[in-house]
Length: 231
Image (tube, rainbow, N blue to C red; front, side):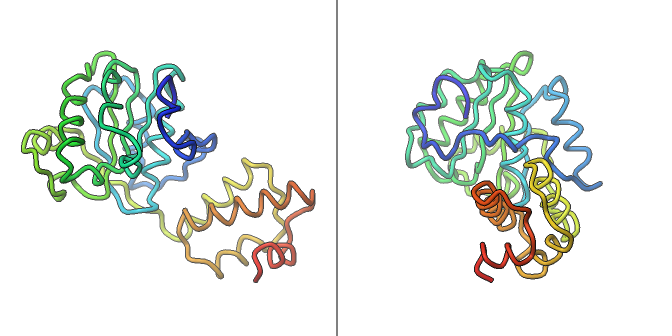
């Protein structure tokens, strides 16, 4: 999250520097969504992105915030809703970009559902853009407030299709390149056949390799990967 409310949430939920559109590997299935999100003028109604875990929903929402002016962007992952109160949504409806992640975590919570209804009502699409994400279509979530269900069903809905194995490895290579990591020949294939091909799992490995390479100032080779990861 960016802006004056940042100190009300755990540090871990700040925007990641790498969560940009340039760092997002897409497929033909997701191309329309990416094109739409990168042109905020098209966001004249709430947008709901739904897809499974590790499909890149959080990345896209943070990329939308990076695209907006820092002082006018708000990012809230509702998986942390127990650490904040619903009142955190008060007064953010006038910002240029409001992104609410993990919408499914609010289903069945009366206070949060009411806060979301009020937020949707407060957003003026002429000046503000609201982008939401969830693990499933709004109609498939267990909302208590019919008013919220109705408003979410009126949103512009996109399904985010997960990358296939090839796309996931392309994302790994792109992220490594953007970090300036020097991967020796064969390293990517070596990692790819030894870990579950999930974006979150591979990004965690990349983080460990990056941290170690900075300390050692070495090119990342297969023997070094084995040493760092204990393989």
